[in-house]
Length: 232
Image 1 (spheres, rainbow, N blue to C red):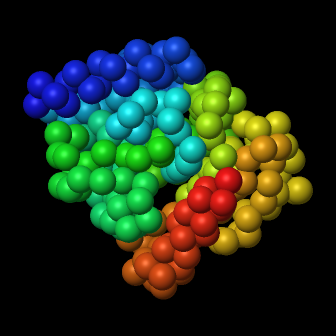
Image 2 (spheres, rainbow, N blue to C red):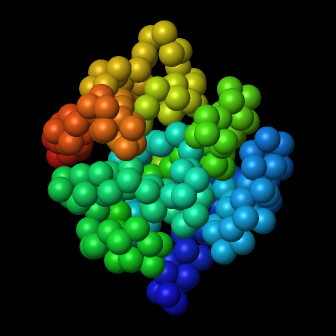
């Protein structure tokens, strides 16, 4: 537990040097603030705050791949405080990252497990959990002030995986590009400046249960990312 706390403190200092972070009691989005406060009363032992990026084990400046999700899951990252930790989406994401060399250790859906990211950072376009997992346009735009600087200040960043259309669109806007020129489509790779964007359907249980996203389809995205980074 002490090792985890020390890593978190170090990570917070690293993030602060690169991009602003919303405070634990951020009130920029009243609807999200009220929803968060509601769950703090219901589950006082949960994290219930803006979820910070999950950083690579050897420092944020080593990031070559950025994975962008939509927002914390209510019983996932909102509960644990780490992106994609505590719900099904993390099971598929982290097993895939390990398969292609973007993570190591054992994922046990806890912030104090031995999982570590390799040259990879994971962030949500919206830092706070939204009701029904649906942030509004205004909330997405408001939170971009915390998201955009991350894209701009990672010196080794080469590839971005966007999980779902909302995360993709927020990424395109954060990079100052037009969505019409970079539309979302699973596997529809596009370049914005020096970055290659790899869009994917979100690895949610709903998408996998309905067959919209299969494990093979998800693996193909990260196989392409691995090949691209190895060649660059």
